[in-house]
Length: 301
Image (cartoon, helix red, strand yellow):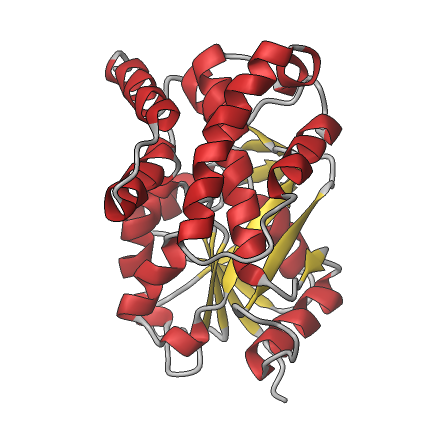
C-alpha cells in the first residue's frame, strides 16, 4: 500500500488549522489558496494556540495524494472548483464540512470511489481573524458507508492520521454516524443561533433543550425515511453528547451570528426542508428556524 505523502488543505479556518499544524510535520503539506488569499496569508500567517505557523502553498503542476476541504459552507462550491488542478486519478478528497451533502457534490465532479465520508466532531474552535484557539478535544470521523472491512483508501488515510497523531474514528455504520452528527447540528447549532446562547443554556434550561430536541426529532424522522438503521437511541445519545459540551462554548453558528456573518443554515434546516419536500412531510420547527435565521442574516451588512 502506497503511503499518502502529498497532502493539501483547502480552508484554513477554525477546523482546518487544527489539522494543518499536525500534518505539516509528517508529510509534504501545502495550502490551496487563490492569489488574493495567498497575498493575505503571506502578510498575516495563522496563529494557533499562540504559535505562528507558515505553511507552503500549492503551485501550478502540483498534485495531491489527499486533499482535505475544511471551508465554511458558503465557500464550498468555490473549493470544489479550486482543487481541480491538483487532483489526479488517485487523489483522495476528504470533506470536513458540516451537513450531509458535500460528499455527494464532490462525487458528481470527481471519482466517487476516492471521496470517503467524513466530518469533524469535538469542542468548537474559536477564531478571531488569523488567531485560532482550540483545546485539542476533537476527532475526524471518516470511512465508507460500511466499514466492517476497511478499504485500501481508508487504510491509507488511517496510516497518515496515525503518523500525524490525528485523533479519528472509523465507525462501522457511517450512515448512522453522519446523521447523528447532522442531527446534533440541526438541534444545538440552530437553536443556539436563534437564542444567542452557549451550550450552558441547553444543559440547564428544559425549555431550551426541548427546543433543540424538537428540531432534532424532525431530523430523526427524515433519517429513518432516508434508510438509516438502528436509530432508536439516536436522540437520547445526542442529548447526552450535548450535556458533555463545555458550558460556555459557542457553536459555530452562534459565532457567525454574533460576528454578523452568513451562517450554515442552508445545510441544516435548508437540507431538512428539501428532504421534507421529497418525502412529503412537514417539519415546522426547522421551517420557522430557517426563516428566523435568514431574517437575522438579512440585517447583516
